[in-house]
Amino acid sequence: MDITPELSIWTREALERLFDLSFLGEHVRAPMVAGRFADSRMLQEAILEAIKQLSPPAQASPQSLVRRIHAVLHLRYVQGLTQSEAAAELNVGLRHLRREQDRAVRAVAALLFERPAHNEQGDAADTRVDADVKLSDPNETASLEALLYSSLHVFEPLLQQRHLQVDVVLPSPLPKARAKPMVVRQLFIAALTWMAQSAPGSVRTVRVVVDGDWITTIFDGPIPSSPSAANDVSDTDIKGELQTIAQLAQMTQAEMVLRATDNSTQTIEIRFHANAKRTVLMIDDNLDAIRLAQRYLEQSDEFDLVPLSHPDEALQRAKGLRPASILLDVMMPEHDGWELLTLLKSDMETASIPIIVTSILADHGLARALGATSFLPRPYSALQLIASLRSAIARSTQPPAQQSA
View (spheres, rainbow, N blue to C red):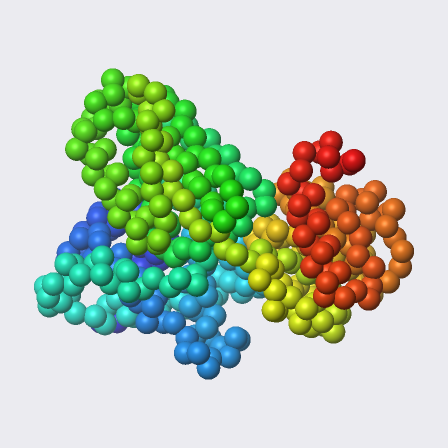
């Protein structure tokens, strides 16, 4: 089948709403797809399988087209990042990202419409759960913050329809979880579906709590048979969603606990293993300095270094990455590191990230005055670097009175 512009648009819309099964259920009825997909689940599985087939071989160059296409698909549609967030993650401009995104959509469309129609595929739907479990990777990490907000974005029309408000309370910085992003997104969609069965006009809360090696997401919602539950929702619907949530949690090796809070509400607690390593963004246009820091941290069980050698992209990168800490060189020939420090500390999305200023000059006072958490003189050893990171991150979690003590 030729991939027409109409099929590319149809595929892009399916990718953008990949975890919205209600939308996909209507989408498969479009005349142009001619009954190719039996239901929303089959379309979702076909897209996820297409993305898997587009995975680059291990020997592929980091700059190869196949690796770029897969990265765009995974960031934009599996993890649910916005175009700006994906561009920051890939360290490219928005125009470049959109070109790669168009290529990626066409690649998925080609795979979707080269496959046989659903009536020639046997019992593929019956093996859905087994296939998902096989795709699981214990080394994958998920940004719960990005996935939660992208899921809420998908869910916003239903929340407005039911006159519901969802407040989100997150710690900062929030470490990544050891979990499969596409399963976590399905899990969050299911939890929000459960929350949306509350009475119209309710205010619900999603809280995320970090406790040692665990990250717990807490959703509050209705109790079956509660008089506050929406009139058009049955106890069976609520129990069915809870079963789905429990199954998805098991698939990504998370723990799910249901707790009653009072006579009309209960909470779902989903506990994820926190990723052992915390991300450190290093902003420095000196490649030798970056290589040295990478060598110092590559054997560390605590930190992963993400280098950025283009300081003009620092703010966008920090917003997308939300690192546990930032290492900032202020002695960059073509950039004013002090201005960059001021910019990072004045933006509400990055102000809480602890910043360690590094320099060959003794600028401790200026660094602190402009908002840096600490100062690390150059040259430094691996032990000094790790100690500074530990101290800066620890200080950022203390109350303001203790930070200034």
